[in-house]
Image (cartoon, rainbow, N blue to C red; front, side):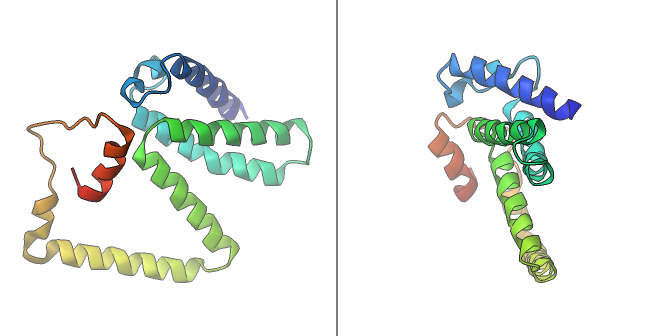
Length: 159
């Protein structure tokens, strides 16, 4: 409970500070100081607590203080992950929701088989003719996308 409430407080502070700069992608780093180094660390921390908040809702007695705090926390954390502009955090939340769905539908064994088949296929494809070298990072320059749309398209285009 202590970590949850502390992160909820810090997240509210960051969101208030971020609202002062208009939630602009270009300004995402300044409101995080001194709590987080960058928006990726912030989004990652939040995405780890979203499943905990969701679980707390199901495990708490309805309309109790813990239940209400868990609902508020889930809402705040989901909003904050979206506004963190961290693609990795977004993917983590989507992956967690998919995992929850597979567990709920009792498809986890099949999902694991498909997942490992996809990983094996990717490894085989990337290792063939050294294809992985085409995807190596370019350390000579850092790419900063000025808009959220460009930031998202970088996932698809690999830039």
